[in-house]
Image (cartoon, rainbow, N blue to C red; front, side, top):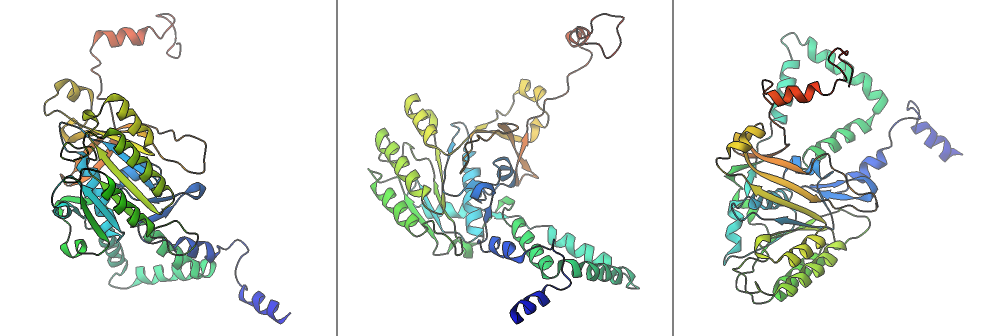
Length: 380
């Protein structure tokens, strides 16, 4: 009884509809760069906030993301670098494989995060609140004190959890390289796929890397990232071994599925045969393709708005899902890839340019909607 009275005494002054601090604490147990989603899904950021929003939260943990490259321009590197840079910023383990002799040199091309203006805006609001006579600041403190009795300590924990959500994805400045001290971490591994005649070494490195991030219940969730550039590039020694590459993707997909990691693979689909290209696409959990825009396409410039700022198109073919049989239906599947202030990647839905109303066919089409010329404006 005494224990019950003590526990009852702790809840005096709190409403029965007050928030429970346990749920917030449980969600805050995840590490930086990991976000919980519906149906038990867990996401890591792709490094592009707009792409995270389009995919419903980011790249699904335990999935394989494949990006079909464009033979005309290396725009797939924008996605790969953003994905890798986001993992480095969050201090997540990273394994990179590329068709080059010194793959660690590729880390020097990773972009740095854009300085967030949220803190500056918060400071401006706080500075504006403290006026010369102190009335505004006193009023803010009085309002905050009144709400504190309803939320208690949950308000602070909820605010901290909200800040963690804001740090889930960063905008990256493509003109500014990542700081060198972040690249010297022991959590970053690199392997070259140029000299190897087989995929055995790459598969062993991926297996060792993923064995450190097996999926476990409870505890702090640390996500790993695997980035493989141009898996079937002609520079690789296993270039003509199609079935070996398919077998590698199947093995990697099985290992990633049982781990807390995400694998992103880019491949030039133009050099693959149509049958093997379809096999690769089928093995992907999330499938994306990127296409460059010609420098001067007058017909396309008349059709789309903001054509001058576009650098390419991103097409979403398939989105990974877990614990659900309902397919993911997107509002749009093709998006324009733009550079905001020539430094940050932005994805936008395609908007058709306004049609000139002086054209004759448009008037004829609009007039055919009415049953008669003397009908009202609501007739169709």
